[in-house]
Image 1 (cartoon, rainbow, N blue to C red):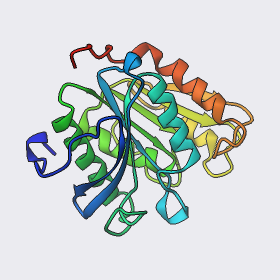
Image 2 (image 1 turned 180 degrees about the vertical axis):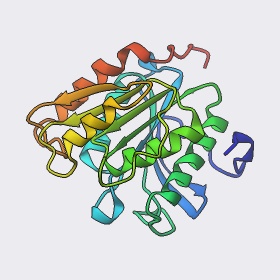
Image 3 (image 1 turned 90 degrees about the vertical axis):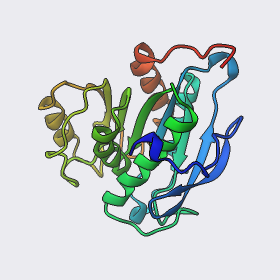
Image 4 (image 1 turned 135 degrees about the vertical axis):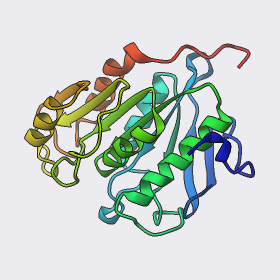
Length: 231
């Protein structure tokens, strides 16, 4: 979707962050926007996608919110959102196809209201699959996949993005086959940065702070520039 196709009746990015409903392909999309501390703010914004809606996934998932926290601490603005049919987001679950369209619509909105910002895409579990599907349409500056469900969804036909990208995978994941993720990562060109977290399950129980640190350490070298005081 081209930013010029964005519905100009859509709201601006909320000053200081906050909740809003954005017009989307299947109706309203529920968003939660957040802003970093002023002195840390960089010229970038990240969209974070949540786990599978039919298995209880929402934008309030703890891994999603720790992704938000890490990215805010790195200086990016963030947008969490509910996929269609979750919370106040309208529509019905569409097995990743419509969900990808929702993500693309949010990106078009951000490129209209935050022109010039680097666009980052992040996702956890099912959300990482949707994020990877959308990356080919959006050309993000950075991609972040946490516990991508390789083997549960068909990753084989999705082209690797040209941007820097990061995969974080727990070695003791009880939902996703970690060995399948590692084998898939070895086939990718350009190769992603891969962070293996030992003694870590799918939902990062008791390891959320470790995940936060791993994300910040891995992403620090690719941050967009600091936002000017005039911006």
